[in-house]
Amino acid sequence: MKRLVGALAALLAAWALVVPAASWAAGPVAATGGGRGTVDGVHAFSDFGFSVMRSTDGFVAGHFNCLMAGSSQFPGFTLMAVRGQVTHATMGAGSASFDGVGMFLAPGVFDKSAATFHVEVTAGGPGVGTLHLTLLTPMFFDLPVEHVLHGQISIH
Image (cartoon, rainbow, N blue to C red; front, top):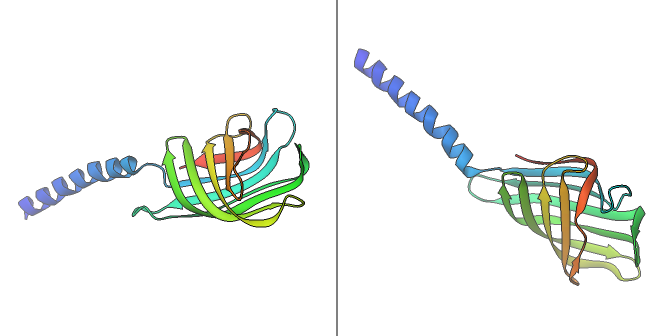
């Protein structure tokens, strides 16, 4: 009985050492964020929100929404929205990138078109976190990198 208890204790100790290491090796499994972004550090550029999850088997699910309306100062647009489902993601310590399919709206330019997009984010709150949106279709449109003005981006 003593041997069995000793063997069980050794097995549990070894398991405790392996499980945290395996979890750490897998890296972050979620990127979430929301708030307002700015390109000049003062004025709002977009309102954004996203939640991206990666399961242990690598399956990715999530959503992304970015809206520029009213408070944004972007030449050529009075309203622009990109939203959709996330289809692929890569997450690292403090940063993530993801791709998705959805909808692009820019009245007078594209009145609701199917779209694909790429987003890169870095973790942090105001002045630290960043969001970079690139519209891939229906046209290539690389928006400027935004810093979080209000809100938070987390990668965990």
